[in-house]
Length: 221
Image (cartoon, rainbow, N blue to C red; front, side):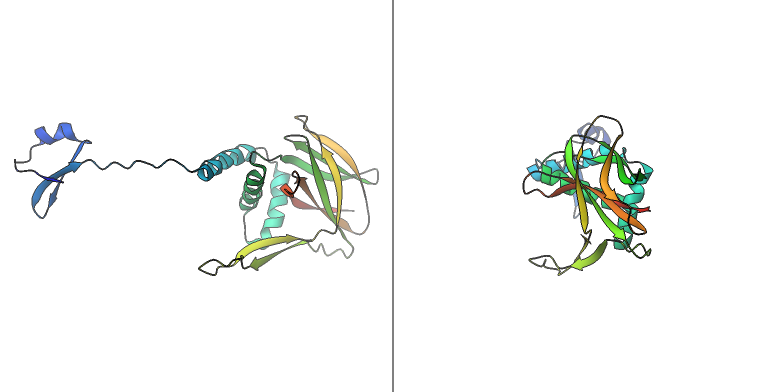
């Protein structure tokens, strides 16, 4: 800070706009270097988050209305939106995979010649699991549940975290092929009960678990 003893003048101060900041302090005209808000270099974690967000919004546009409805079905019990659901799944898969995770869209299930037919579009070749749960009663009881869980160790504010637990009892593995178009595969899953809840999940590498999953759909028999 420097005191300014000569009278103020627009002709003098105008050319210095953006370089010198003139202001009054206790009635005294003062000057200082114009405030400079230099951003600190981003951390590797921040850069990865930005890359993940860009990839998510790029892949988001591929989702069909049926894909979105699958996420809506699962998200409803947890007070999330389907966008929240997709974002959480995608971002988790990105950080596990350290890059854009394999993704499926245009997913549909139907019965064909007594077996289950899966149709999809995949962004890359990968292994996946089709989770399913038979509905023996006709009440369409969902095979997942939302619950509040205290993280370990507990945070300073002792806030609980809303999590989802999937309770599918059956699964079958399928190899997904990335052709740039819709691919259909018939699975050895047969029509029993009133219908089935179905979900598709992509497997990661060794010890990585699931790195992407769809929403869920109910397919009546």
